[in-house]
Image: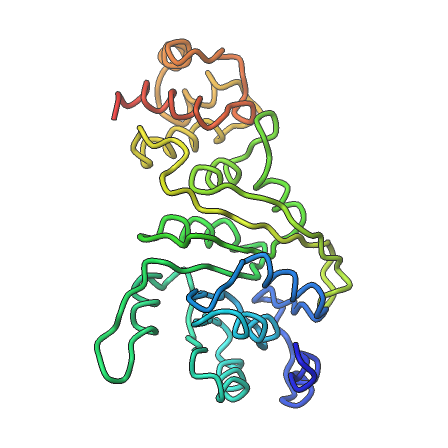
Length: 290
């Protein structure tokens, strides 16, 4: 942020705004962290960035300096006129009011990239930068990663615990870890202390970079079959897989034992110990080869 850029605190005071706890609004006000988040996206002037949750635009300023186009989606209607006024001199930055979970990303990008002289022009290469409230993190991640086409890269600001779950390895896996790693290679970057936000949250946050895979990590199985199997396995994660699969897939324990043994997996193991290739093998055994 340059010296002429108003801080989020200045904008809140100027417009007599209060942040909404119901929307999970915690604004990052530390400029040094904002700079590092933008840097993690490796932006170039040829890049289009989809920013989710710009708030009052502190990070948007950083993105606008480095990217060729920035499209920011904000749920809080009160902030849209403020954002548009602040970025009025930057025609390559646009703001959309809406719930990202109700928007189709390629259509959103195509519409916003249209020029006044012609029809919408879709882009197949874009990056996502987002500050995600805890309560919608998983839903937004799946929405973004399952979009066609997906982004090439995503940089996310999430709670520290969520970041740790996203990068977990077999032995500590979760449904979130499997879902993210199926589509992308996650890396946990800098920790951001709670004191860098307004209002101050109860926990620290962390930046996570997702390098989206050209193909899913397990490409020889239908994603629907893969995730149906994984959801069943984690449905009763404290139980052995023979029990959780039996309950989740509505089969006998003997059938679950058969599938697991045929996949080379000990039926006594628990879901958090399986690797993505093992989940893929199990899904193919349950549903038949792709």
